[in-house]
Image (tube, rainbow, N blue to C red; front, side, top):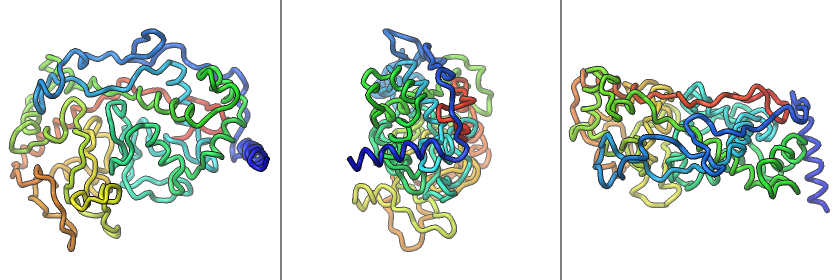
Length: 384
């Protein structure tokens, strides 16, 4: 009984959040077609890409231009994807209606936020940089320390973090169930949601939308598909550096995802005034992973600075230069780290570094960027 009363009170509170206005029933219609880049097959959206014609990494070797995709998460319905889009931009998902998922993952900033370290509810600074959401459908581990193994597991971190969206599961469900529009939309999307919206429905819808954020049609991809004029001579030179056994970039940032999803200890410097971040060691309690972080994708890297888990490098050239300055040169005093064996001293010339940066900029592709909704079911201003 007490739990029922609390849920009712929280639902009433959700309707009184600052700036909230009623959204007319029926004003929001969920999509019946798949997003661009996906084909509707037996009621589910399936990604269409030439990469699905290629063989696996094991058959093609590290850095191969015609390497196939790893396991891909798709097969959501159009309604699941579109409902997730509305949830993604709706500040109702935060404790006080001030922060949406899009607050830290802005479409126009490569689904990052342009900050060294993100800011959550109440302007609180978060400990790490917001990673891009492009191509998360191709990942098997999430967060910089790799602690989550599904999108559904990952999203509960920011939703319920006191520093990020500050919510609780109970309050989130009360707020959504307190919205007539959301009850109707979830009822249209999930057959078992008509008695009430459940947490698993929320997580699945958000995972469906995030899995639709695919970026595989950059100028690099055109080159890989055989359109060799897609890259100029300087960019091809940078690609050759990237794939070389001197720079060895492709061994960790393996095409076509441009990540091997492994944890690597790099020895990047800590930002001034910030304590050393133990990274994966705090999760695994394995001393060899102290200072270890997941290798990030390089897709849309030109849009997602500042760089590294702490945002310590403000521009792409400085980030590349770090790997050229010698093994362990930036390890904080007093730290003894087991650095990844690929971190050495390639001694690239300035021109080679510039060429490499030029190549990385060819990985930009926003052709399937979704449209932010002009209004969200809660009636709050859509979050960015």
